[in-house]
Image 1 (cartoon, helix red, strand yellow):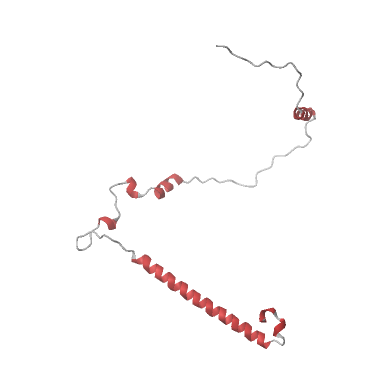
Image 2 (cartoon, rainbow, N blue to C red):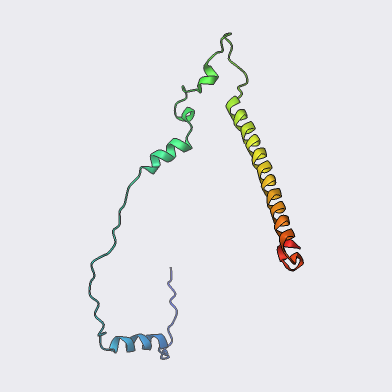
Length: 138
């Protein structure tokens, strides 16, 4: 086995300009600037939270860690002794209906308020001597 090494040229290398700049900076006298150490005017508080426990609790469903656990509505038979095939959350349906009613009421009140403002502007413009010169009256 033979090792081949490249032959280095005997030509003098040109110095790097940045190297000359660094050497010139090192030759300068030290700085006359002196900084006094100040007392800190702030405080750092680090509160360590057990995020791993919380993330595990929210990322992993209970039935994955404990296969014996099942939601109550799945294993509890109804009063006739049968396990229900379908479960409907009536509370969620009621909330959705109430939300739609509130949105309709809010929209009706907004339309009534807009109409009242239009009527008040029209009455104010009618009372002005030259309503055509006022931008809101045009």
